[in-house]
Length: 219
Image 1 (cartoon, rainbow, N blue to C red):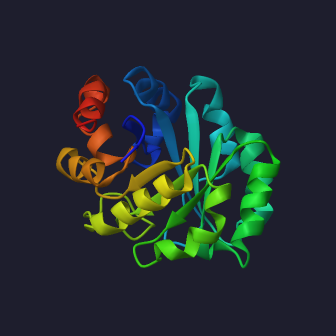
Image 2 (cartoon, one colour):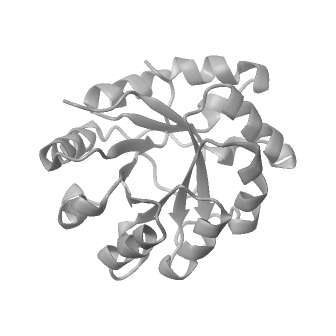
């Protein structure tokens, strides 16, 4: 198994939106590796969050990688807007458009990294034919749409994704999102994950505890 060092991507979905810029600066200072930004459209998933203007407004408070997870459909027409807002990685779902290969081409054409997200019931096989285009694979361990859900133990799926990445010979982030806490983080890392998204587990107890909370997830 040849995964990269474990990195933590706090999800700002769990931040205090009334002081979002300060929250992003705080998790940056606390040791976040990526800033995970969940964009939901109220259509593809049953929740509505924010769009490019909000991302653009916080871009100047952190130089960390903006890991933008688009839970929107159709996704292709809005990719450019999120690139202009400051995304470094854009991740789209297999089901978010009719042509996944074209979606990935569109993301890459803007000179940024491209990821694919797999819902709990979406099989790993659905991305085998695009593995050569991927910089990130995001496995959802909850159904997308809301923070604070319980972890679905898809450890075999994580192992299968790790095997697919290793067989490709490419450097691809294996990211897990959903119900991540110190215990589930350890299970995911042992299964081959190297990038963990956490909302509640990072933002609980206030900014003075963010560094401790992030460190607790590294295993």
